[in-house]
Length: 489
Ligand code: NAD
Ligand code: MN
Image (cartoon, rainbow, N blue to C red; front, side, top):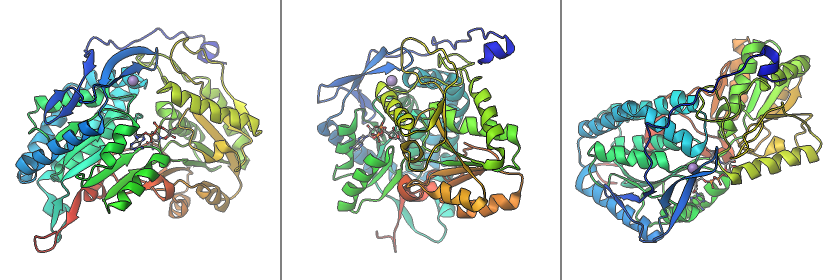
């Protein structure tokens, strides 16, 4: 049954206007404060995954272009940013934060057009968080002596940063804001399917009169990323993306003893005890896995529900699934938007097929999907065994694998039975149980009776193969500084 049959209600379309956005036919690389043509002469297309329409032609940076960007960042560092008083760096960051707030509708619509996420998420989650990260880090820029008391710290120099396509502008903010606050300059590489908001940010940075070379943005795919990772004049690397690529980057960094932070994949357990507030837990579980189509590294992709309530809980969850509105990401009523790319859709399909083939039981509500674009019906699996690929591998899509448990000890054992360790969720009425569980769950973030709560002052990051280093909070600033003794490094 879907919403229409249950309540006999029709949702009138409520599309957000795209008039606020103007997309250039093509974009160059943002190097030394200017948009420049790539020396490579190569370009690639970015599309809207909701309808497969071409949006813009994007420059593909070669290693020569990356070299130019690193040189510009070095110059920006030595000529301006390194020795600029923190108070003045803060002013620039506040200016960027305020301009993001002023133009947030434009950024939100562009984010949704380029990546397929629902407008209500880009508008109400991504953009407020982006501004908050710039404000928060601006606040630290002139207070580094308090951030690192009794330590003499200095910036690294040029920072190379590579980000994924699931929260394109937010990941750019998580990377750029703390790097600039601590006096580094950056070369950032956005993901190839979602470069547009980073390029709009480059325009905003020009408007904010940031000194040239402090922020450089090089677009391209894996090869461009590799050129940045291997550039000998980069002093620190930060990466968010898949564990596979993260491992390769760690190897490259190890050879040069380069400081590195990695935010990688996840396979979070979302644990619901029999004494939980069930209706709230259902909403939490739905938010945990269907937020941003499940393209979330901390997605609660493994539901562990206590056996005593499992039947009722799963029945309610199925009813709730049928009420999710899947479709036009620009519609303000949409809950689940488009899958970010054809390649990601194929990965999701392949893993879901493996779940069926390995014997798990699939449930999908009836759901009309648009004819064009990349779509996947919200899905859950019951009868999941620990050996199934859908229990072990990150799907990065709107797919929930459900297992049951009897005791808290069993829940912990199952939750930790994964190479990942980014996040976890607990639902129970008992505070003591929350603390007992949180002590034992191997996860960088543990949410209790809520999920997907973020704040720039709160550190986020992983255990095990989910990576190392933290973003947000003081813990997120410290990877961007190095300690000096007696004024020497
Ligand atoms: P990916 O790791 O390949 O891409 C992330 C970023 O790294 C992109 O900017 C990409 O261009 C860049 N990149 C790719 N190869 C590189 C290389 N050799 N050197 C340097 N940079 C490189 O992720 P993907 O292929 O887009 O997605 C694959 C899977 O990764 C997904 O299905 C999902 O499971 C996972 N993923 C996780 C996150 C996360 O936030 N943890 C984000 C994206 C994808
Ligand atoms: Mn795109």
